Image (cartoon, rainbow, N blue to C red; front, side, top):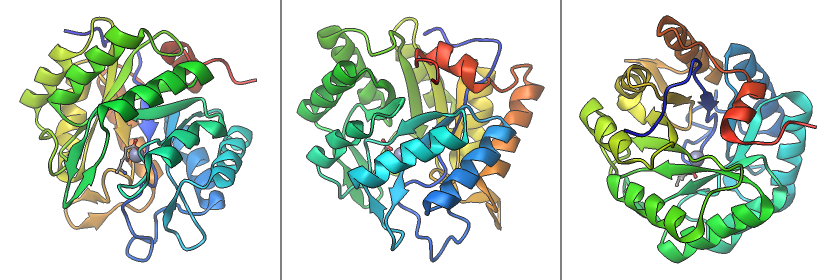
Length: 280
Ligand code: KMH
Ligand code: ZN
């Protein structure tokens, strides 16, 4: 099984995503000001990484380069969090715009290792795009997090590392995204199978979508993994109780990690862990 245990738990917050609708979910952070306030609250609650999707003035998902650059600057100014921009965007975003995300010079970025059915849509990640994006992360020294929605994506990760070598920062960290309708289910048996297939030395986080949130979180903690939480992935705190703010999801993850004797990793330690250069 891939190495994954450390004395602390890396907590990533994914506060916004590209799918939820602000008019239906008023607590979703969509403006830059809302995002920075959320980021500060989540850092105080135990997050070390923020996975960022941004919205336009109408709260629609966008990959606008100037907005992305402003977002990176504002999050760096207001927090010590590792800023990980989404290169997945929305299912409607084209490959060129997704590659151009790296022009905003984030610390890190997501890199999904395969196409997956995504509810009624398709999240497109064909091999030519994956390898172009991976080589760009190496050229720009942006640390990728390999997003794995299905077991086949793990095979593609092996192929990527075999053909193009180690990532920027030298360390392979993955995020198992479980419970997407069309991807791998969010249960402990699948979690164990995915972790067993990871490259030697890789570390991993896991996130369960919707009702898979708690089983995946508890399974990941038990298996020595790390956690991603946030309103990108779940809008319910409990049955019938909507999430009021992203920070309460981070607080719950931090409490469970502390109970598991692996308290939250601070951002400076997370930089060393992931191979992200120190904040200047
Ligand atoms: N919004 C999804 C289609 C990523 O951020 O890299 C893709 C996604 C993955 O959220
Ligand atoms: Zn995302």
